[in-house]
Structure formats: structure tokens, C-alpha cells
Length: 335
Image 1 (cartoon, rainbow, N blue to C red):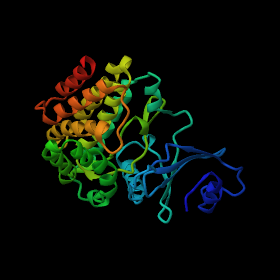
Image 2: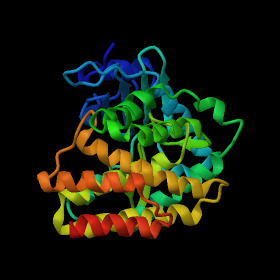
Image 3: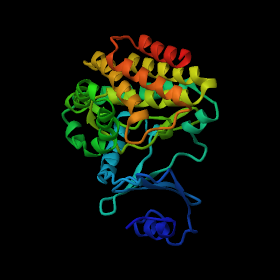
Image 4: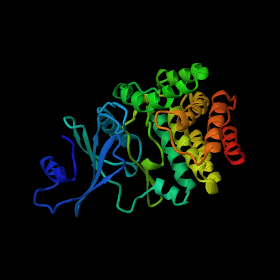
């Protein structure tokens, strides 16, 4: 069964999340519908997010994805409630293991999606700082935790939606770089030491009264923390390349995020994370132009600039975060 706006009320009544006597809820589909069907359901007393995992990405080529990722999201949210303030997270109300559906509370109606703020030119660096601090807390509290690790050993969805389209695909475009890319890919699973969120970026961050509220944890797994750092930075670099007038501000949002993270990260291998994050960023930036789903950049000059910067990052010997972010800033601004 695939949920839709027409079947939503009867489904939620059957699951006892709303009453049959309630007025019909307002159902709004959100997101792009590529990997999940996501609905915001509102009644006079409730605001719910209903999310159903799809079994394939909605593109022309066949791209299958493990629907069980919705269960990892449930486990991740419940674990994060033990680590972070409940105010920054949704609450799980229902896990439907038959139809791969997760129902959670929705952000407050006053919440603003950080992605929307950024696109409108409002770049609040304190939000970036909060994200860096929260991520460091997650990695600190789950580092080499033998009770947590068994809950998140399944990495199939991460491999299907991150490793294959981002890392493995770019080897086809750069066969001479196979060794360094494969080493980095293997490190993301071999160096598993903490809970990795796998999808921390502005489209999954809401702002409620100046405070961060996180959503979307389907890529959660026990893995290498460098991926989270690079994933956020890649998203911001793409925004910088697509917005020349505020390029420096977007890049500063990378700098303050990484600095906040490393100021709070205290687990044993944090220096290795810094080194690996630089290589991850190189791989993920190559995927922006040459991965399974290339992103649109303004022009061919910017596209080639992104490729050159990515390749430099893969072979750089920079170790300090300030040097790395300065290199990115200088490359993208000076061209």
C-alpha cells in the first residue's frame, strides 16, 4: 500500500493517531517524492509527519533502495532523544513495519526551514555553529559504544544512496584516481566508530525561535564520522558556487561549522576524522559534477573549478581546519 492524500485519514484513524470524529485533516505532500512519500498532516490539535519509504528512486534508470532504512530512522530518533535535548528532535509516534511507514511529530508551525532561509539570503552562522556542536555531541556520545553499535550495523541503504552514487560512480570518470577513492570508500565502513547521521544539511534543519530542529535520519548507521562533516560542507560549497554574491558567507558557514565541531569533539580518533573529512569532501565534490546525479552549476568554468578543487583536496597535505577552509574559500572566490 502506498499512502496518498485520499487514504491518509482512514490510515491514521485505523492506527489510532487521530479520531474518526475529528474534522478531516489537512494533508500536504512535502519533499520531492524521489525516495520517500512525505506528508504534513495537520488537525486542530495535531501536526504530524507521515513518511513512507519507497523501494526505488523515482528516476528513469533502475535504482533500488532498501526500504528498511525507515526502521533505522526510528532507532536513530529514539537514541538521539537520550543524547540531545528533545526540543531539537521529532518524537516517533508510529512505526509500521508492514508498509514501511514512520509517523512523527512535525516541527512547530513557526519553524523555518534553514534551506529556505539560505536561499533567501539570510545566512545565520549561529545555526551552523549549533549544527556543528550537535554533531560533535552525537559522535562523542556514541563513540565505540558496544551497546549502540549493534543497533546500526546495517549499511545497505547507506551504500545504495551514498557510497555507490557518490564514491563508486566517480571512479568511472577518474579511473586514474581509483586507488585513493577506493581507500576512502573502504574507510567509511572499515573505520566504523560512532553513529553517523548521513544526511545533515540545511534541507533537514529547521529553525524554531533561533534553535536548531533536526529531521531525516534514514541514512543513520555506525560508521566513520568524517562523512557527516564532508556531506554538510559539500552542500554549502554547492550553494556558494551557485550564489556568487554571497559566496563568502556560505563558505564561512562551513568554517564555523567545522570549528564548532572540532572544538567540541573529544573522542580518541578526532585527528583522523579531520584528515579523512578532507578526502571525503574531495570525493563528494567530484560527485557533484560526475556522480550518479550530477548537480547543476552556473557554467562550465565553475564546473571545472569544482573538479580541480575536489582533486586537490584528495591529495592535499593540509591538516588544520583553518587551512582547509581557507583553501576552499580562496579557490572558489579567486577562481
